Image (cartoon, rainbow, N blue to C red):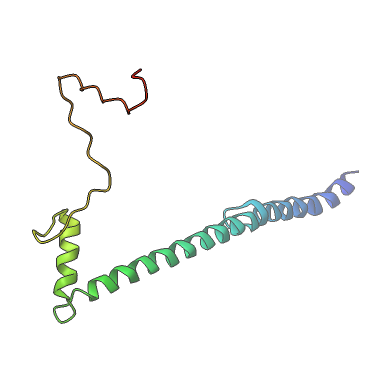
Length: 120
């Protein structure tokens, strides 16, 4: 019996060690599940990099347009006025919404009735 028990100790020990390594290969910090998570993060980060690169390129184009030889004075004037919310004295301002009628304390005069119609 003792001999049989000794014969089983070594294989059981190897099975336990193997189970430990298999468990960590799947669930460990560098295991299969962690790699899948890292791949998902990598895809998301690459998309963010693409977005940021496009945004940087747009800003770089705007900065390049500001070099002294590339500045269009009319465009600069228009952009400055838009940012500062100013208007040129020669500009024509057209209100988009009609201004509200001023409130007066006097009652409104009655409007005359159309001929042939009784006043109600």
